[in-house]
Structures are given as C-alpha cells and as structure tokens.
Image (cartoon, one colour):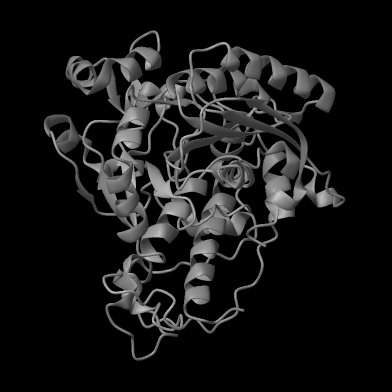
Length: 439
C-alpha cells in the first residue's frame, strides 16, 4: 500500500503560532526529525508566510525514537523561538510518533525516517492555501520569495492550476569553509551570481566537493541559463529530476509512503507528476533555495555506507564506494529482489501514449494526456504488455536486512538496491494503474 505510512503515524501534539493568514496564497510545507529543529526555526525565520511542519519524535542521526514527553518539550521550545521572530503568517507544527510494528522482520524498518509519510502529513495541514512550496527543512528560501508569490498570486495560480505547471526554484549550496546558507538566501540573485562566479556557491549536489553528488537531480533546471537570465523559462523533465517546486496543492500527486529514509523518494513524485499527470516545469526567474549543509543521517549511511563526504553522496543513484558500473540487477539479486526493468521508452513516453483509458478524466483541451488515444492502451510504446502481475515487494524484511548491515563493505549489502528496486516497481505500478489494469 503506497499510502500506508500515515496510518502508522500518531498525532501527539499540535503547536501553533498565530498570525495573519495568507488568504489562500501559499504554504511552505516541511518535515523533520527532532535533531533538525534548529533548521525548522531557521527556515521559519526566512519565510514570513504560512508554514506547516510535521515533526517525528525521532533522532535522525542515530535512527532511534525519542520519548514523547521529551519530544513535546523540544518542539514547544522551537515553536517559542519561532514566535519570537518578526514573522507575519501562522505556523502549525504537528508532532507525531510511529506505531510499533509486530513483525520481527521489520525491526530495522522503524530506524529509517518515514520521510514521504511525513511529507504527506505536512501537506494535510496546508488546507488554507491553494499553492504549496514543499521544501526540505535544511533549505532556506531566498529573500522576497513570499512577497513575490503574494504579489503575483493570480498569475501563479493560473500557471499551477489551469496550465498544470510546477514552478521550479533553482537550488544552490554554500561551498565556503563555513556554510553561509543564510547569507546566500538573504543576498538575493545578484549576490548569488557573484558567489557562484567566485566559487563560494554552486548548484546543489552538482559534484562531490560540497558533500553531495547527484547532478541529474537539478540538471534539467539549466542553472547556468538561470544565472545569466532575467526571465523565466520552461524546463524539460529528465530521469532523476527532483527540483523544489511550488505546486497546486490539490493537483500535485502525493508522495509514495513506502519510501523511507534516503533515496529516490522525491524523484518518484516528480516523475509521476511529469509522466502520469502531464505537468510541465517552469523555472522562476529571480528566486531560489539554498541548502544548509549537515552531517550524514543514519538513513544516508544505511543506503550509501559511511564514508568521507568529499567522495560524494547523492540521492539513490549517486556513486557508492566500491560499486561497479553494472550494479543494478546483481545488487538486487543479492537481496533476492526481482527488479522490473522498465525500458527508457516506457518511462519517458508522453502521457498521451497510455492515459487515454482514464475515461476522460484529463480530457480538458490543452492537457497533454488528451492529445491522442492509443489503439491499445495496455501496451507500452516499447511493446511490453502491462497485463503481467506485479508481485509485492517485501519491504519490511528488506529494509530490516539493510539496516542490520550498516558496516557491510559491499554496496550490494546496503539498502541502495532495495531503494532502486522499489523505485522501478513503483513506476511500473503507476503505469499499470493509468492503463486501467488495477482497481
């Protein structure tokens, strides 16, 4: 069940900061574990509008739960710090813990932060605005972004709701000896351009020198063009693309809650938006987000292994120490995972190839899925049929096995193969669902 994660989350408290509502404009939605509450305070300081956060009574660095009484006190102290800032919009911080699982095989599962379930739980709180900015807690929005959205809300609403656009915010990170994410966010685009030119900042996760290495995550944004441009432009989705976006809350797909910890969790949501939902990407001209560097989490090490951050660390498909170039099928086989290798043609085909059977659900003029109806909607462009059964993936035991092997020297004994297999399986399931082969 791709939406089972929230059923295991138990709401324990709701702390709020009163403020002036955004009148239906935009809510920043985020999530974090207790060890990242300082980042939540910083993010709220940089966003004067409505903010909704889901916090788990959990320590992300160790992968261990925190007692709910201590968690409540820590959250309340953070909210008091937010209330003391000069912000305008209201803040809602929901504290959750996670129900214990009875299966012995799932012992390791709860050590992995349920990131997508918490993302959806935060979205559940954003009912007062039509637009949402889903932003991880270790990113800061650029100065003036909220005012830009507030002033141009009618045009942005039209882009997001009527034209089905996801509004992309280019992502950067500080490369100085001291991370100056706040300074970059406050300085605006002109200062950021200068920082990139001097080597003090660069595109987020563009290479390993800043601790991350997953260039395809933001490559389609074409940040070099953005740095020299005064206007917005369209970006074309590619495999692995995972920008931070402003979206219409009720149109954008939810996150697949089977993903826990680290790797490909946000990539899947944006793949689904582009390939199944027919969304396009529009890069905003003047605003951006900045990553505040931090140490590796328990989940990162479970997926990629503990190693020197300078060697590069990335979402799902990044380099892994000791990995060979052909790790996919063999890695999965080591964990007894039968991967569904969906061809590139299947996964990059426009929605018009296979969504025609949705009984006109997306039949309004101009939507890409209404372009034409394929003669046989149960056959993918590559010729592969979708009628074959998709067996379940035993995530409890596989995630548990992976977290029990954190010191394993070989990448195939870590969680990366499980994440890859789940990602491929989830895409195939979505294509089958769109073709009407599932209830």
